Structure formats: C-alpha cells, structure tokens
Figure 1 (tube, rainbow, N blue to C red):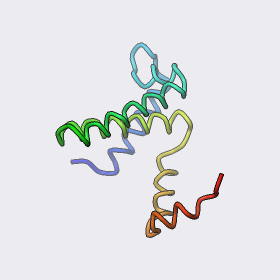
Figure 2: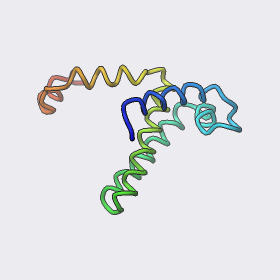
Figure 3: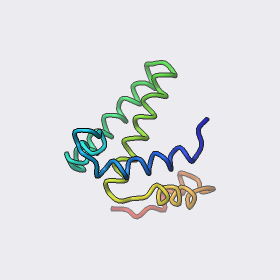
Figure 4: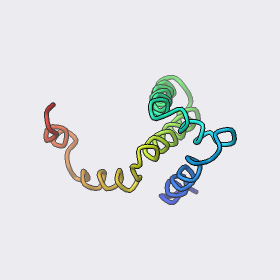
Length: 108
C-alpha cells in the first residue's frame, strides 16, 4: 500500500544516491551527466506517459507515470528543490480555479 511516505522515502533515497558512484547508481549517473540530461530524461518520460495514456494499457500508464514521478523527483533534488516546496505550492493553489490561477500569473 502506498502513502505520502512513499514519496518521502523516494526523496531520501534519491538524495543519498546523488552522491553515490555513477557506476553503481542510476541516479548518480544521471547527476554526473548534468541537469540538462536529467531534464531531457524527464521530457522523454513525459512523452512516454502521454503515449501510454492514449494508446496502451492501464498497467503501462501506471508504469510510465511512476517513471515520470521518479525522474521529476531526481530533477528537483538536482536543483535542490525539496518536494515539500512543491507540495506547499499545491496547497497554496488548493481551492483556486485553475483558470483564475493561470490568469493571475505574471505575464512575460
């Protein structure tokens, strides 16, 4: 059974593995290749998740979504952004219409 603790454990594992030997850790190998490579991998996983949602089984979508969340968390850790910051932002937005929230964003 999963819980919010799953993400906390994953975040702690990723933090530990960022400094590991790239020959023994996938996370360390990604870190050694740099933020750009981590971001690229996240983009690939996002695309695979979309494809699974549109053309594959429920199980395939679940697997791709797990890969997507994992790689997002690696990117956040690489950039020193705690998952708690993301959760706080989601909490801040709770109860706000997505349309209103988007309209309130600064225009570039």
